[in-house]
Image (tube, rainbow, N blue to C red; front, side, top):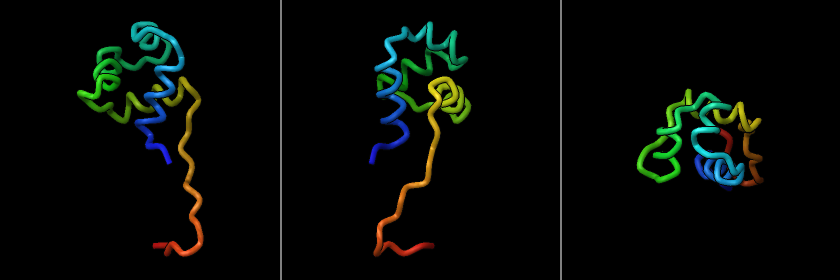
Length: 71
């Protein structure tokens, strides 16, 4: 299963927008986006929310297989 970061990176790269244009459309800071894509920094929850909202991404609970204990 992909992490949230992996999914977000793939989505950003696949959209084909410049970091400047992505900032303009989503409101997320382009410098933060660049650092995130370069792997030198993470994103704040606010930045993640902005990008997820723009790309219409949402988190969903993972389906648990049999044999895993519920906590």
